Image (cartoon, rainbow, N blue to C red):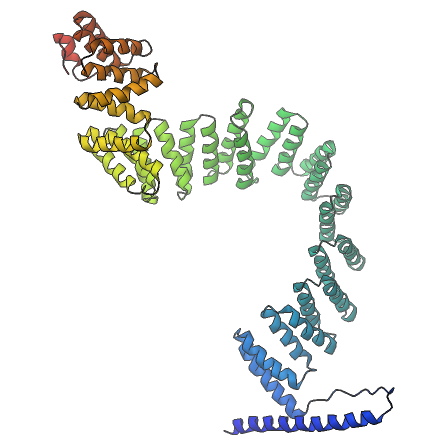
Length: 587
């Protein structure tokens, strides 16, 4: 209760004092009127009383509590009340400026920061906050002047010349930035970073010659720093001074013979000069170093990939991926980029194996798994396709593509029930992907037929033809399976006939059409198309069908001869032995 009474008393005193001040001001106005019109009257600013100072301090402390809690709007209220009592308090002015900055109000902050600097021109932080506020308002000239005032008024503050230079750079005022760097070196002596910054300015100004001169200064001051030789070589290259660049890189390599970056630059420079053999030699030396980071190697290899296929680059690019793996044997990226490159140049099995290595180190990349199963399929390695698609499904169970390849692998391996199960699971994930759904229906048509679910097979094929009437896979398989079942033979003939008309020399399509005609008992027609087929293929199934047609036409001996040839090929039907032995037709 005593504390509350004191606060109330202080508030009352403040009110009385304010009234007293108003009376004093009125009296001063009257005196001013009595004075001559041309007289200048300078009145001292009224000083706060001790009670006002104490109350202001109390308000300030309350504001700091909210400031520490990051409740800046509430803190601001207390700081402003305190400021009304003690406007000449520099620390309070600074805190008001800082709070406004935190509230994203740099314009308001400027006024208080100016006051803080005026009230205490020896405090570094006040200048820095004022400069920041000006910068936020994009008043760069004013901010620069603040830094100059700081260094003029506060001893041993030359380090802020760097801030001044950065300020000039931020507004692309290169001339003033260069002058500032000159001031720095006059006060502090030659500095490596200043030379580098100055060189960067010259490069931004596209003044390569000046940048080269600055680079030479760096080299003179640091004759054993290989990185400056490399930087100078880049500048010579930019200035189209290739020979000078090669010469300075030679000096770098005398100090660090295995420096991969020097070898890389020499490779590029020799390529520019048409010295391709030397260029390849240098890039191989670079890639043989484990100090050349994997990301740089991958970036270079991607550039090679963009230029492939190209017989002139194939050999060196393959060597580079081998070197990348050799120097980074535990990096998934090394194996992945090798797989990408080898795929393009047709080294499919090598590519697939490298992708497999990549996922051993990092199995999180969907695209790498996709490449693995694609290559398994292209290599016709059904067992691998099944294994790898199952591994991928453990990681990506909602990716339809892996269900598709798992089902395809089981189809090839004649695991028809497993194939259908996988394909059905994957198809459920394709509701928004009609093209993918079509691929599933193509395979499901084959799978359902193999497990004798013919209605489902026909429905799957019809679903494909509804969106893709000329789908060759479906037209061929659908018509052939119908012929084997002796169902819808006219439909089978129409579908197969379209294929033969479009591809008159395709032995598979000719055989399918002939077999449909055979089932329709058009043996002469069937013979005609089978003769066209065997003219371009010695497939066992086609030869066996040819024998069957000959038998129907009464040419028994010729039929047996064709069956014997088909048996020799090793891919004929299960009836081939009985046909030959008994010289009878079995279907």
